[in-house]
Length: 196
Ligand code: AMP
Image 1 (tube, rainbow, N blue to C red):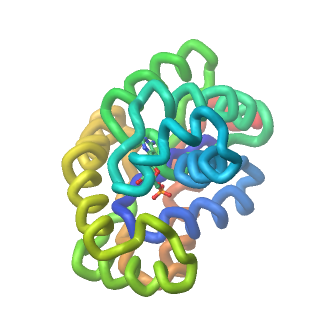
Image 2 (image 1 turned 180 degrees about the horizontal axis):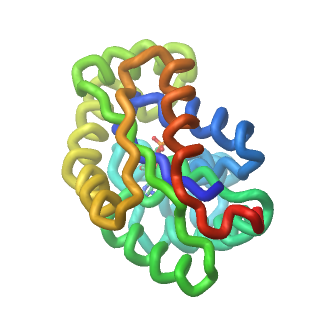
Image 3 (image 1 turned 45 degrees about the vertical axis):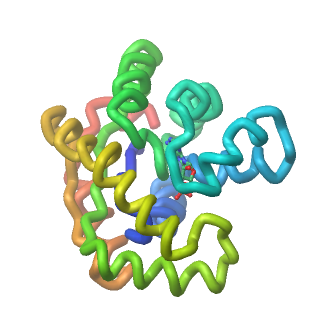
């Protein structure tokens, strides 16, 4: 299974991505986690992305694509991928699609976790206390939601046009969200599924 997960900050994308990867025997690829790992390890890339991560702005497309692309292709050959937080801009989606076509690893579906922004802010503030994330202050959260609306939300239409979109209500309890996603994905046509 090769799936892209799209959702505003706080929509439960990470939780669902882990569950879906486990269910389908696919690799969970979390863009934010990989970027934070670079930062924690003090790599050159980590230093370059530091300011974006702490402000809630998006890291430039070329850096993210370079960090993720090899992992995506490898995952596709190893049971599939669940992309969590990538692509996040039209530029990333187009670059990924071009490369995926060439490598024969295009997505089977794009799941959009649709949620009300006030409720999402409340969820994220609650989570910030638990996780201690540097980018979960009220101000940064508001900014991340605005960045999502401006740069990532257009991808919903993009995947709809490609006939890949599955829209799920993110405000349902997490277990119900998981069930709804799996049900929809199982009904999705995967022409090359026998090879996975
Ligand atoms: P996340 O953990 O997915 O909420 O991502 C945390 C932060 O990592 C974001 O606020 C961005 O600064 C950065 N980030 C994650 N994924 C991407 C992406 N696909 N493109 C650009 N920046 C990203």
